[in-house]
Each structure stands twice: as C-alpha cells, then as structure tokens.
Length: 503
Image (cartoon, rainbow, N blue to C red):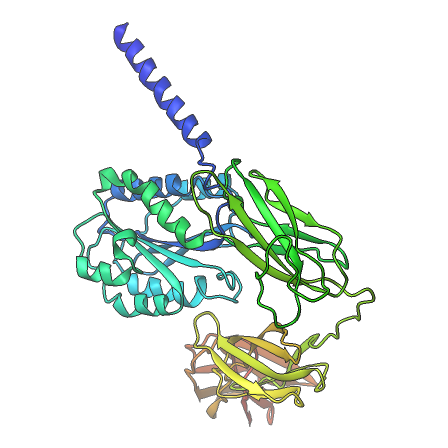
C-alpha cells in the first residue's frame, strides 16, 4: 500500500511538471524575434538511440517559448546521415503544437556522418534567400549544429562559406569532438556560440543557447504600415514586457536632412512644423500617427523607457501619400518562355518601358542545387536566349526590372530544357521464312525507355509492337511482300528518330 502511494505521488509530480513546462513560456521570448533558424541534427549511426532521443527532447524544450509564423520565427530541421534528409523546411510549421508534434515524430536515420553534403543542401536550398521554401530576404539566418563530434568530415570550407554569406553558426557537441574544428566553425564570439555538454546534462544549456539565438534574431525594427495622406500605423516588437512606456516623437523633414535629428518641440525645417510626441504603455506594440501632411517625408523615433535598463531607440522614415496619387506603372507584368531546346531556351518579358527602366537582370540556376548565373540586359531589350544549359533539366529563372526611381520588380518562372533524343542506328532486316522477317538494330542510349516497332499489314492497315530497352532484335510474322517496317527509340518525353526498311 505504501509503495502504491509513493508511485502515485511521483506520477502526479511528473504531470504537474509537464503542465508547467507548457505554461511557463518566458514573456521576454514571446514575439521577440524575427528570423529563420535551421537545426542540423546528427542522426548518424555514431549517435546512440538514447542520445538521439535526448537531442530531440532538448530541441522541443529549446524552441517551446518562441512565437512562430511568417512574420516571426521560422524553424527548419535537416538530419545528417549517409544522405541528408530535410525533415521539414521553414514554411512547414507556424504553430508550436504542430512543431512539437513533428519533433516528436522525428526518426533517426543511422548510417554514415555525411555532414558536408548536409551543409551543401543547407546552403543551396534551405538557407538560400529568395528561393521557394528558402530563407526570407533581409532577415537573420541561424544554423545550429547538434553533433556528437565523431568524424564530422571536412566541414571547414562549407562552414566558412555560410558565415561569409551572413549565416550565424552555433554548435552543440555532446561528445569529444575536435575542439579546434568546432571553434573555427562557429561565428564569433566562440565562447557564446560553442557548447560542449554531456548528453545527460544537455538541458542545462537550454537558456544560454536560446539567449544566444535571440541575440541574433531579435527584431529591433520599427515598421511603418498603412500610410495614407494624413495617417500612418507604427508597429514594433514589445521589449518592455508590460512595464515602463514607449516614447514616440515624429515630425516632417526636408529632403537631404538626416533622419532622427531634432527633438520634441524643435523644428528641423523652416516652416515644416514642430515635432510631435505621444506615449504608449509598456504592453503596446502599435500606434497610429494622425494629422500628417500629404506628400511629406516624416521621421519617427521610438524609445522604450524602463526604470532599470537602457534600451536602444528605433528610427524609421516614411512619406505620406499625395492627395491625388498617380497609379504606378506596371514595369514588369509578364515573363514567357519559348523555343526550348536541349541546351537553350528563350525568355521574354514585358512591357518594354525604357523611359522608366534602367535595365534588366536575369538570374538562373538548375534545380535543385545548380550554380547561380547572372546576366544584365539593356533597358531596350525584352528577350534573350539562355545558352549552355543542361538537357532535360528544370531551371529557376528570375527577371528583375530596375526602375529609374530606385525600386525593383521581379518575377520568377520555371523552365525546362528538352530531353536529348538520339536517333536509332543500323537497322537490319533479314527474311527468315514465308512472310517472316527478323529485325536487328543498335541502341542502349541514356534515358531509353524502349522501342516502338510498326509494320504494314496490307489494305492500309498497320501493326505495332512495344519492346523493352534491352531488346535489340525481334521476329515479325505475316509481313506482306514489300511491306515497310520501322523501329523508333522511345524516351521519357517523346520518340527519337527511327529507321525504316522494306521487306
């Protein structure tokens, strides 16, 4: 009886702890950040099943406090094995419930520790900005590598490339890995981005690692939205957690004046009017500015006021709408593809507006991981032929129009080159009996799916026969005299050029 009571108490305590873990999300983490975080998880055979389970459980605890979504934090998971496996990408989960469930379903790959290929996939697909499913432009990108440290491979060069491209790298090692290799892999400072911990104690670094990620992706941006002729909406990430207040100062500025100059009650222009000041409570995340002048450039400064700490001011500039705004010309509305061959394709776009466009830029690469190529096009040209392409390959092509006003508009399309269709060679026909002939030919081409045989039966009738790619001969019966017999190679997309003989 005493044992049963003890077990009941232990179970009740565990349930209480699990419930508290879901509800004890720190206020300082909610809505704090905006960025894309990719976890590179060692899922190879050198990691014991128990260790892998602990790593996944650690990720669930680490990520639980973050607010997820297209305007907040996005998370991806890439597993390292013999072949890298993208468990889920940045745009897969936008809620904690679905993310936690997905992490719980994650299965270990086993196999070799092929970290280099995983890093190449991370760089060319997941962390690359401006591609479908990739990272968002102009937002911080973070790679967190969880490894047992056993035989990571030649990771120095791919890690260096990621850092050069602006990706922040953090490493958690649960084994006895090469300290020098891991120290060179992380982004500075290494003492804040490199963690060595025993797998049984990994949860003790959750807060430190989470804070290191927050410092990289913390959203300290003041956004101006819904601008009209006389109003504008300000939005920011709350940093005061309900305490203190936000001081907001805004006023018109002349062209060429430095944003953020002037203060409350001052007049930075000659007759543009004084700066105005409003305040919002510490739990606010937006404010509406009213009484603005049409077609006027404004500067706004938001300063969080807290009793115990100094927080940086945020600045932004914006221009109100004119009273009668002119519709903006559609400088790039169509992109079309034509004249596709095995190694080239024509790309055209429109409309052609040389008086509004400074020039065009075309970026294209083979999917999924081909090198990026960039060409510049004159503002008086709206078509070009991309050459030197690979046969039977899908390409992602982006056309960007650089406007004279400084703005840029871009459109992206997918194009496919044609499959190489080698012709049949050396068809031989031999009579082997009454109305029977034997056909022989040469084949075995790349991408071959089979052969299509046709022959005349008389009275405008034809017979057909499909043969597999390993068959290079066949015998036809009941073939009339002087009947025409043809053999064509069959590929994935079409038939190649065949040969014909007369019986």
